[in-house]
Length: 278
Image (tube, rainbow, N blue to C red; front, top):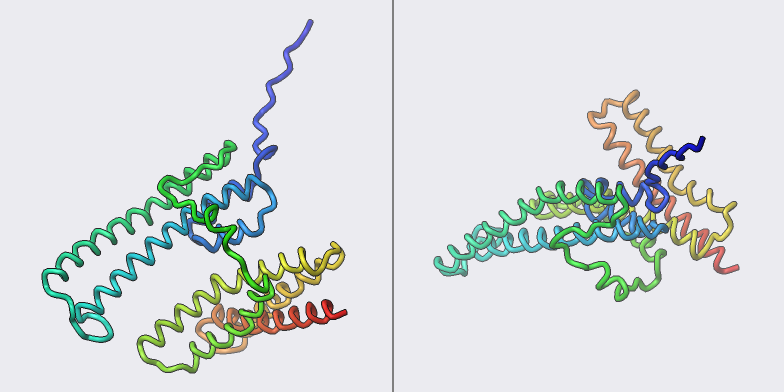
Protein backbone atom coordinates (compact mmCIF):
# COMPACT_ATOMS: atom_id res chain seq x y z
CA UNK A 1 0.00 0.00 0.00
CA UNK A 2 1.56 3.23 -1.11
CA UNK A 3 1.36 6.37 0.94
CA UNK A 4 1.49 9.92 -0.27
CA UNK A 5 4.40 11.81 1.21
CA UNK A 6 3.34 14.79 3.29
CA UNK A 7 3.45 18.16 1.64
CA UNK A 8 6.47 20.03 2.93
CA UNK A 9 5.69 23.16 4.90
CA UNK A 10 6.90 26.57 3.85
CA UNK A 11 10.64 27.04 4.17
CA UNK A 12 10.57 30.74 4.95
CA UNK A 13 14.29 31.13 5.53
CA UNK A 14 15.58 29.12 2.56
CA UNK A 15 15.73 32.13 0.27
CA UNK A 16 15.11 35.00 2.68
CA UNK A 17 16.69 36.27 5.85
CA UNK A 18 15.29 37.51 9.14
CA UNK A 19 17.20 40.75 8.73
CA UNK A 20 15.62 41.22 5.30
CA UNK A 21 12.18 40.74 6.85
CA UNK A 22 12.58 42.87 9.97
CA UNK A 23 14.50 45.75 8.39
CA UNK A 24 11.17 47.34 7.48
CA UNK A 25 9.91 47.16 11.07
CA UNK A 26 13.27 48.41 12.38
CA UNK A 27 13.24 51.37 10.00
CA UNK A 28 9.83 52.65 11.18
CA UNK A 29 11.23 54.20 14.41
CA UNK A 30 14.86 54.57 13.28
CA UNK A 31 14.36 55.90 9.73
CA UNK A 32 17.43 56.18 7.52
CA UNK A 33 19.74 55.29 10.42
CA UNK A 34 18.41 51.76 10.94
CA UNK A 35 17.80 51.06 7.24
CA UNK A 36 21.11 52.62 6.21
CA UNK A 37 23.25 50.77 8.73
CA UNK A 38 21.65 47.44 7.86
CA UNK A 39 22.15 48.21 4.17
CA UNK A 40 25.85 48.80 4.81
CA UNK A 41 26.20 45.63 6.86
CA UNK A 42 24.12 43.35 4.63
CA UNK A 43 25.91 40.54 2.83
CA UNK A 44 22.75 38.63 1.86
CA UNK A 45 21.15 39.82 -1.38
CA UNK A 46 17.59 39.52 -0.02
CA UNK A 47 18.50 41.66 2.99
CA UNK A 48 20.30 44.14 0.73
CA UNK A 49 17.29 44.61 -1.55
CA UNK A 50 14.83 45.03 1.31
CA UNK A 51 17.14 47.41 3.16
CA UNK A 52 17.59 49.44 -0.04
CA UNK A 53 13.82 49.71 -0.50
CA UNK A 54 13.34 50.82 3.11
CA UNK A 55 16.24 53.27 2.84
CA UNK A 56 14.85 54.78 -0.37
CA UNK A 57 11.50 55.39 1.33
CA UNK A 58 12.97 56.96 4.44
CA UNK A 59 15.32 59.12 2.37
CA UNK A 60 12.25 60.30 0.45
CA UNK A 61 10.49 61.11 3.73
CA UNK A 62 13.61 62.89 5.00
CA UNK A 63 13.75 64.96 1.81
CA UNK A 64 10.09 65.93 2.22
CA UNK A 65 10.76 66.75 5.89
CA UNK A 66 13.68 69.01 4.98
CA UNK A 67 11.59 70.80 2.33
CA UNK A 68 8.64 71.22 4.71
CA UNK A 69 10.57 72.56 7.69
CA UNK A 70 12.97 74.53 5.49
CA UNK A 71 9.99 76.23 3.83
CA UNK A 72 8.48 76.98 7.24
CA UNK A 73 11.74 78.47 8.51
CA UNK A 74 12.15 80.58 5.35
CA UNK A 75 8.52 81.74 5.56
CA UNK A 76 8.97 82.75 9.21
CA UNK A 77 12.13 84.72 8.43
CA UNK A 78 10.63 86.51 5.43
CA UNK A 79 7.43 87.47 7.29
CA UNK A 80 9.06 88.86 10.42
CA UNK A 81 8.22 85.89 12.63
CA UNK A 82 11.73 84.46 12.88
CA UNK A 83 15.05 85.45 14.37
CA UNK A 84 15.62 88.53 12.18
CA UNK A 85 12.19 90.04 12.91
CA UNK A 86 12.16 91.62 9.44
CA UNK A 87 9.23 91.23 7.04
CA UNK A 88 10.02 91.48 3.30
CA UNK A 89 7.09 89.64 1.70
CA UNK A 90 3.97 91.50 0.51
CA UNK A 91 0.82 90.44 2.36
CA UNK A 92 -0.68 88.77 -0.73
CA UNK A 93 2.45 86.65 -1.29
CA UNK A 94 2.61 85.87 2.41
CA UNK A 95 -0.98 84.58 2.36
CA UNK A 96 -0.39 82.33 -0.66
CA UNK A 97 2.87 81.04 0.84
CA UNK A 98 1.11 80.31 4.14
CA UNK A 99 -1.54 78.24 2.36
CA UNK A 100 1.11 76.37 0.36
CA UNK A 101 3.11 75.57 3.49
CA UNK A 102 -0.03 74.37 5.27
CA UNK A 103 -0.67 72.00 2.36
CA UNK A 104 2.94 70.87 2.45
CA UNK A 105 2.73 70.02 6.14
CA UNK A 106 -0.55 68.18 5.60
CA UNK A 107 1.23 66.05 3.00
CA UNK A 108 4.19 65.56 5.35
CA UNK A 109 1.93 64.42 8.18
CA UNK A 110 0.07 62.01 5.87
CA UNK A 111 3.35 60.55 4.60
CA UNK A 112 4.65 60.17 8.16
CA UNK A 113 1.54 58.21 9.15
CA UNK A 114 1.68 56.23 5.88
CA UNK A 115 5.21 55.14 6.82
CA UNK A 116 3.81 52.82 9.49
CA UNK A 117 1.46 51.18 6.98
CA UNK A 118 3.97 50.67 4.17
CA UNK A 119 6.61 49.43 6.60
CA UNK A 120 4.31 46.69 7.87
CA UNK A 121 3.14 45.84 4.35
CA UNK A 122 6.76 45.54 3.18
CA UNK A 123 7.57 43.28 6.13
CA UNK A 124 4.66 40.96 5.31
CA UNK A 125 5.71 40.92 1.65
CA UNK A 126 9.26 40.03 2.71
CA UNK A 127 7.97 37.12 4.80
CA UNK A 128 6.61 35.64 1.59
CA UNK A 129 9.81 36.29 -0.33
CA UNK A 130 9.15 39.60 -2.08
CA UNK A 131 11.40 42.64 -1.79
CA UNK A 132 8.52 45.11 -2.14
CA UNK A 133 9.29 48.61 -3.34
CA UNK A 134 7.45 51.28 -1.37
CA UNK A 135 5.03 53.25 -3.59
CA UNK A 136 6.06 56.82 -4.47
CA UNK A 137 9.58 56.35 -3.05
CA UNK A 138 12.44 57.85 -5.03
CA UNK A 139 15.15 55.45 -6.27
CA UNK A 140 17.85 57.50 -4.55
CA UNK A 141 20.20 54.71 -3.43
CA UNK A 142 20.28 52.98 -6.79
CA UNK A 143 20.71 56.25 -8.65
CA UNK A 144 23.38 57.91 -6.56
CA UNK A 145 25.22 55.12 -4.74
CA UNK A 146 27.79 54.63 -7.49
CA UNK A 147 28.50 58.38 -7.55
CA UNK A 148 29.08 58.68 -3.81
CA UNK A 149 32.69 58.19 -2.84
CA UNK A 150 34.30 58.82 0.52
CA UNK A 151 37.91 60.03 0.22
CA UNK A 152 39.85 58.24 2.91
CA UNK A 153 37.15 55.61 3.39
CA UNK A 154 35.92 54.49 6.80
CA UNK A 155 38.93 55.85 8.73
CA UNK A 156 37.70 59.33 7.77
CA UNK A 157 34.35 58.63 9.47
CA UNK A 158 36.14 57.34 12.56
CA UNK A 159 38.45 60.36 12.58
CA UNK A 160 35.42 62.61 12.15
CA UNK A 161 33.94 61.10 15.29
CA UNK A 162 37.16 61.79 17.17
CA UNK A 163 37.04 65.45 16.12
CA UNK A 164 33.31 66.17 16.31
CA UNK A 165 32.37 64.29 19.48
CA UNK A 166 34.21 66.57 21.95
CA UNK A 167 33.02 69.67 20.07
CA UNK A 168 29.39 68.63 20.44
CA UNK A 169 29.80 67.77 24.13
CA UNK A 170 31.55 71.11 24.71
CA UNK A 171 28.68 72.94 22.99
CA UNK A 172 26.11 71.15 25.15
CA UNK A 173 27.82 72.00 28.46
CA UNK A 174 29.84 75.15 27.90
CA UNK A 175 28.63 77.07 24.84
CA UNK A 176 26.42 80.16 24.93
CA UNK A 177 22.92 79.66 26.31
CA UNK A 178 21.21 81.68 23.58
CA UNK A 179 18.20 80.05 21.96
CA UNK A 180 19.80 79.32 18.60
CA UNK A 181 22.97 77.85 20.14
CA UNK A 182 20.94 75.69 22.53
CA UNK A 183 18.83 74.39 19.64
CA UNK A 184 21.89 73.64 17.49
CA UNK A 185 23.74 71.92 20.33
CA UNK A 186 20.66 69.80 21.10
CA UNK A 187 20.41 68.73 17.46
CA UNK A 188 24.14 68.06 17.46
CA UNK A 189 23.86 65.81 20.51
CA UNK A 190 20.96 63.88 18.97
CA UNK A 191 22.93 63.46 15.75
CA UNK A 192 25.99 62.33 17.67
CA UNK A 193 24.06 59.69 19.63
CA UNK A 194 21.68 58.43 16.95
CA UNK A 195 23.69 58.84 13.74
CA UNK A 196 27.43 59.44 14.08
CA UNK A 197 28.12 56.96 16.89
CA UNK A 198 26.28 54.00 15.25
CA UNK A 199 27.88 54.90 11.89
CA UNK A 200 31.32 54.93 13.53
CA UNK A 201 30.69 51.50 15.06
CA UNK A 202 29.67 50.12 11.66
CA UNK A 203 32.61 51.86 9.98
CA UNK A 204 35.02 50.39 12.50
CA UNK A 205 33.62 46.90 11.89
CA UNK A 206 33.62 47.12 8.09
CA UNK A 207 37.04 48.75 7.93
CA UNK A 208 38.66 46.18 10.18
CA UNK A 209 36.98 43.35 8.32
CA UNK A 210 37.76 44.52 4.82
CA UNK A 211 40.94 46.57 4.91
CA UNK A 212 42.86 45.78 8.06
CA UNK A 213 42.22 42.66 10.14
CA UNK A 214 41.82 39.78 7.75
CA UNK A 215 41.97 36.86 10.17
CA UNK A 216 38.91 35.68 12.08
CA UNK A 217 41.07 35.29 15.17
CA UNK A 218 41.68 39.03 15.22
CA UNK A 219 38.05 40.04 14.83
CA UNK A 220 37.20 39.89 18.56
CA UNK A 221 39.65 42.78 19.10
CA UNK A 222 37.21 44.98 17.17
CA UNK A 223 34.41 43.99 19.52
CA UNK A 224 36.55 45.15 22.43
CA UNK A 225 36.53 48.69 21.04
CA UNK A 226 32.74 48.72 21.40
CA UNK A 227 32.27 46.27 24.27
CA UNK A 228 34.55 48.06 26.73
CA UNK A 229 32.70 51.40 26.41
CA UNK A 230 29.39 49.59 26.94
CA UNK A 231 30.77 47.86 30.04
CA UNK A 232 32.18 51.12 31.43
CA UNK A 233 28.84 52.85 30.75
CA UNK A 234 27.02 50.08 32.65
CA UNK A 235 29.38 50.58 35.61
CA UNK A 236 28.82 54.33 35.38
CA UNK A 237 25.07 53.80 35.46
CA UNK A 238 25.34 51.58 38.54
CA UNK A 239 27.58 54.11 40.33
CA UNK A 240 25.31 57.02 39.40
CA UNK A 241 22.22 55.13 40.53
CA UNK A 242 23.63 53.78 43.79
CA UNK A 243 26.17 56.31 45.03
CA UNK A 244 25.21 59.75 43.72
CA UNK A 245 22.17 61.97 43.90
CA UNK A 246 21.83 62.15 40.12
CA UNK A 247 18.27 62.53 38.89
CA UNK A 248 19.12 61.03 35.50
CA UNK A 249 21.58 58.12 35.76
CA UNK A 250 20.73 57.04 32.20
CA UNK A 251 22.10 60.36 30.95
CA UNK A 252 25.24 59.95 33.06
CA UNK A 253 25.78 56.49 31.57
CA UNK A 254 25.30 57.88 28.07
CA UNK A 255 28.00 60.52 28.58
CA UNK A 256 30.31 57.92 30.12
CA UNK A 257 29.81 55.74 27.04
CA UNK A 258 30.48 58.65 24.66
CA UNK A 259 33.68 59.58 26.50
CA UNK A 260 34.92 55.99 26.66
CA UNK A 261 34.03 55.26 23.05
CA UNK A 262 35.82 58.45 22.00
CA UNK A 263 38.99 57.13 23.64
CA UNK A 264 38.36 53.74 22.02
CA UNK A 265 38.17 55.27 18.55
CA UNK A 266 41.49 57.04 19.11
CA UNK A 267 43.08 53.75 20.19
CA UNK A 268 41.61 52.06 17.11
CA UNK A 269 43.09 54.66 14.76
CA UNK A 270 46.49 54.43 16.47
CA UNK A 271 46.49 50.62 16.20
CA UNK A 272 45.49 50.85 12.54
CA UNK A 273 48.21 53.36 11.69
CA UNK A 274 50.86 51.40 13.56
CA UNK A 275 49.78 48.23 11.76
CA UNK A 276 49.80 50.00 8.38
CA UNK A 277 53.30 51.35 8.96
CA UNK A 278 54.81 47.92 9.55
